[in-house]
Length: 174
Image 1: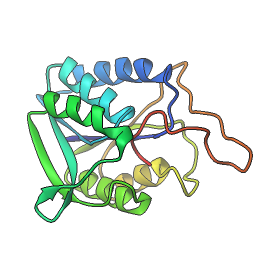
Image 2: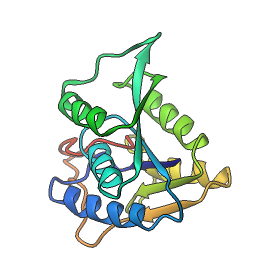
Image 3: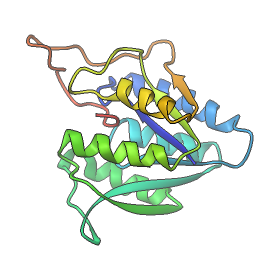
Image 4: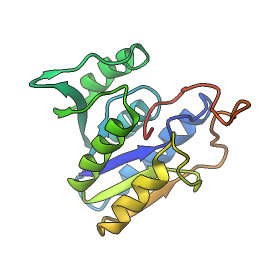
C-alpha cells in the first residue's frame, strides 16, 4: 500500500494541482499498488480521486468508536461519502477525528502498514497544528520511502495574526 498524507490547509485552487500531480505519481508506480488515505475533505478526497483516476485500488481509513464508525466532523461528511464510493475497501481505525494527536496517531498507524508514503508537503517544519513534517520523518525513521509532492502553484492558506491558518480548506495530515 502507498499511504498519502499532507497539509490540511491547502488552498482550494491547489487541490486540482495536487490531484493531477498525485495521479501522475500513482500512474507511474511499478506495480498495481493500492493507495490508502484517512477519510476527510480536501487532500484526502484529492488523493482518492487521483488513485482511482490512475486505475488503482483505494483503501479509506474511517474513525471508529468501538466496532462502529465514529461521527465525522460536518466538514468531512460529503467527502467521506465520495471517498467510500471510490474505495475498494474501508477499514475502521479507532481514533477521534476531532483530535489532532489522535489523527496523527492514525496517520502513523497507516504509515506503518504501507510500503511507501506520498507526502503533499511544502518542506515546512511541523508547527503544533500541522504534522506533515513529523509524518515524513516518522516514515523515514522506519525505512519507509517517502516521495514528496509539491506541484508548482500549490499553496497553503495564509496564517492570520497569531499564527493560525485562516481556514481548514483541504483536510489531510493535520
